[in-house]
Length: 212
Image 1 (cartoon, rainbow, N blue to C red):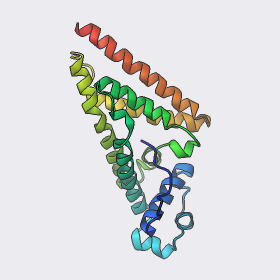
Image 2 (tube, one colour; image 1 turned 60 degrees about the vertical axis):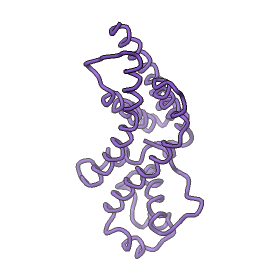
Image 3 (spheres, rainbow, N blue to C red; image 1 turned 180 degrees about the horizontal axis):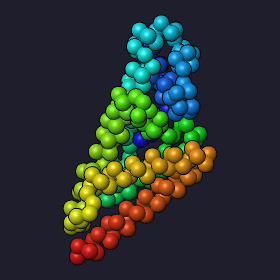
Image 4 (spheres, rainbow, N blue to C red; image 1 turned 135 degrees about the vertical axis):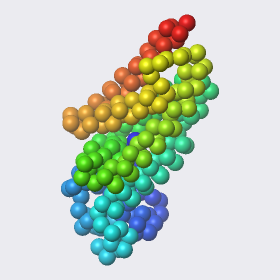
């Protein structure tokens, strides 16, 4: 999951500004390292305004994950990879689109909910669950095209499903983000997406040959 980063043209109320500040700061420095004071400063609001909207920092974390899901859903729904008539072409166009938006500073293209989930999965279950809703919700949007591509090509594979391949795409994407951070090199994430493209092409070709 990625990408929305830019501030809203009209920055909106204090709550939205805090959510956008959380999105940017947590991706840049992590959840634990991000303080309420920093969030308020980045959002241009008082600490009183923070606690008016959120009971505590974890409540903000849940809301930030849900806000990420909302904004990225709209972003990907409007993306050009939906245009091809052929379902497999749409799946491959999705991978190409993910590579195209893996640009700029690492904190600008990595995934808020992926970052949060890695850090708080054991310590903040409510945030983890919100991250899961976001990640698996996005994953589900790929399943129809993958299943249509299987059907179009007469593929009956018992060892993988549209759902499992959709999940695997996110495994590669999130793993690519981790590698980019570890190596401080965005190219590592793009390299992973190139391998994902090759894997999907091979998977469909091999599966089609076995089904013939």
